[in-house]
Length: 232
Image (cartoon, helix red, strand yellow):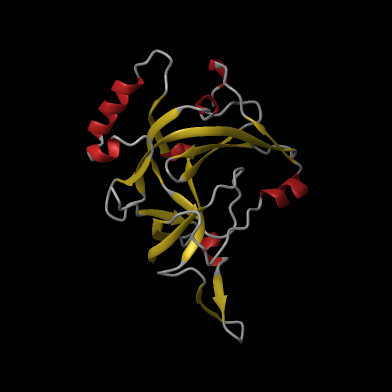
């Protein structure tokens, strides 16, 4: 399958941070538009993600993945690939993905009452960061996924300006369509066509975790396997 285009949601505040201004300081548009080739950080929230499977030691994973593909009505050509990211509807942010979880990390904040952030970096042909938020004494459901092959469905999100993810795993892509939603946060739907990493981007991401590290004393560490009684 050569068509790799997908649609994702960009938070309104992140989108607005790319506003373009005229000589008098008035807003004249956005730096990201149709035809732009930009860096994006693809993400999915754990609470919006369903994992159909993960590698098991007993060898039953292959049959269950085949059954999950059948239920999702995936093109057999897609299902034969070890890694993929495909939309489950025209201009829908609901996608199906399969890939390898390269690593899982946790960011702990030294602020009273703050929650920890847990990120899993998944290689689906393009990188996606799965995000979770848990109390400091609880483990994330992502904790047991390190170095496993997973298949799932999720709502796809993306950053165009200032990601606060633990991992810096940008994707370069051409913007095919831009649609602003009429919701309170002013989110934007982008349809993109991923491009090779060697392609020159017009706009680059500025990751914000380092600034948070200084301001809020963030401690980042690898996330290990989870005791069964401690999954959040």
